[in-house]
Image 1 (cartoon, rainbow, N blue to C red):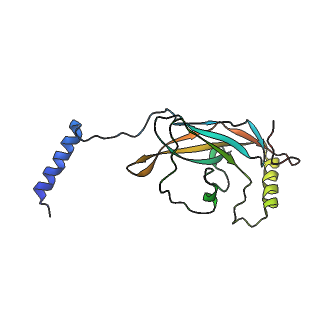
Image 2 (cartoon, rainbow, N blue to C red):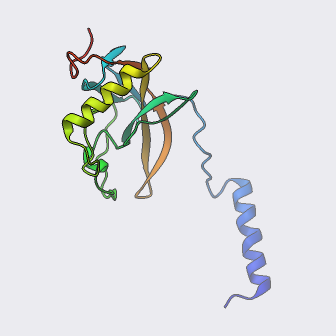
Image 3 (cartoon, one colour):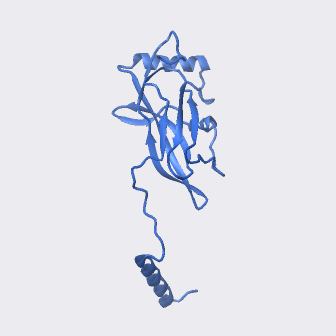
Length: 186
């Protein structure tokens, strides 16, 4: 066991080393420079149209990303119903543990497609009923439904993923089109 005076001396030496800069400290990343960019979104899609886009790493380091859809309702952005990491649709059904994350190298892009009408297995209605309910919600909306993507950006810090930034896409509209649900508006 370390005695009281030795513990205090060790503490004071540590504080002194931090103060004079011998032990490096790293401030929170407060820079507003985006680490990724989101490309390929159209301004409008029908209710159940697939949304294809790409996320590009524009930073100088490898990053790990998770991508989630958000919806504007009641004056603020929130998760879309039944949220999941679009990069890994299995996350809709299972809890994931991230081991050896698939890092995105500097300059690399990842192409993604989001299926808004992907029915979770725990929803009791059929695929067709789930799709129809989504289209009906959109058709009853007072104005077009606004959505966007949130990209959570992580870096590896001593072997663990550490979230450093959220990047948001430009909003896009969803409009009900019961005749051709599933195709994008041109």
